Amino acid sequence: MYQTKYFQASDNHELAKLLTTIFSTSHDGLAICDRNGYVLLYNEAYLNITGVPADILNNFSFMEQKEMHLVPDSSAVRTILTKQTHSVVIDYANGRQAINTATPLLDPNKELLFVVGNVRDVTELNQLQKELEETRQISSAYQRALEHIQTDGDFDEQIIYRSGLMHRIASLAKRFATNDSPILLLGESGVGKDVMANYIHAQSGRTGDFIKINCGAIPEHLLESELFGYEKGAFTGASQSKEGLFELADRGTIFLDEIGDLPFPLQVKLLNVLQDGRIRRLGGKTSRQVNMRIIAATNSDLETMVEQKRFRQDLFYRLNVLSLTIPPLRERREDIPALIFYYLKKLEWKYQQEMRIETDALEALMDYDWPGNTRELKNVVERSFHMCENGRITFDQLPASIRNTQQTALPLHLAKMDELLPLKEAVERFERAYIQRLLKETDTMQQCADKLQVNISTLVRKKRSLRIK
Image (tube, rainbow, N blue to C red; front, top):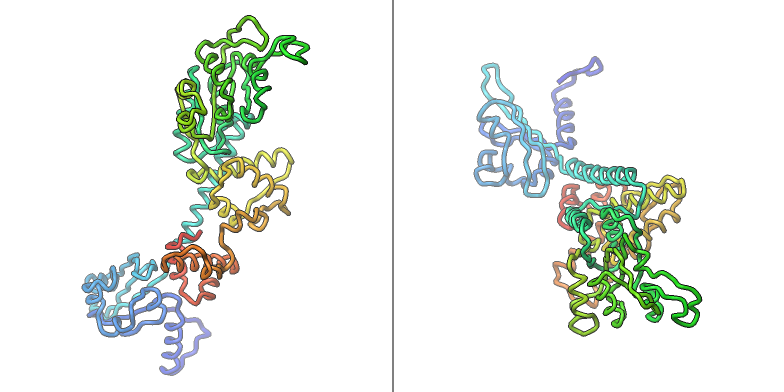
């Protein structure tokens, strides 16, 4: 210990009082034991950090505590055995993690007199480190998404993903692109089947156009003429001949979205096109050869439709030569931050305005289940972009449907729920919502812990067990 010139010698009573105050007010846990490991002095912080009851410290040596497995480890025991300073990281039963350091005090003959133990709580520090690492990972995903955008100016030909699941699907799509067999894309509405179809066309090397048509958006009596075209005079109003979409897709790709909505009579004609590669315009007398790749997509269960006689079995087999199922966004949450930053960057370029998204808003977007998938995500990002102020997208600017899923309000209605829950689950729901609310109302975890009247290590453990981000 060092002393300055301002330190004035005082009687032993005042000096002892000063040292006792320092000992008691230390944020680190302090414990001093004799050469046999029996504890002589300890402070309140030691009890709080280690969770070891005072009765144990008062009656059992550090060696006995370790032998009875009351503590996972003890640096004091190591120091007593070696007369050397030891440090060890210990995970205590109360959920706290601490650096436990023991320093020996020797007499002039190098014999052990006392061991001074210092316990420093690193639980919150480790949690902050974890959160920092998560932030770095999100930032890394952002950077990779930007690099991806910068290397290819055509947004519609890109698939933005970071999940292993989508990586495997994109790899399959790239392999499928090299042949001319029909491809069937399956998945919920909004998962990006049109983007995948465009990607396959871009990877195929075909020199023709990518033609898209929604089979459910065009009236049945017009759909055939749109697909096959017509000759002059084929019907009233056909004052001149017109190419159909199949002809326009020659040497390219035609994407038949919502193929499950294709009228039954046209299913027969589509099957003929797939088998022969030839089309005939309405009112025409000759057929024409077309070299096109057909990609179909649906969010319907085609196999069930086949069983119900609503979709031709032979057409289903012909379309289902190669198939890809695109998973919903809730099953590939790793893709969410990359997609968010991707859509934001497109808007920044379009409107020449830089934009930031706050951490709590980003976390809410990542926690949301996205029933509308990437289509819904894109719309929410665009809405938030235009609603924000000062170039920052905040949690409060997100749609109510997303904010409500965070359960920021205290759910006092739990007692009146129609759904009967086991007591344990009901208590967990209440705790999760209550802690989430207080975390948002306070600036630091320490303030939140003070409001809850718990130790900060208890709050950290609760956050982990309740999966609160």
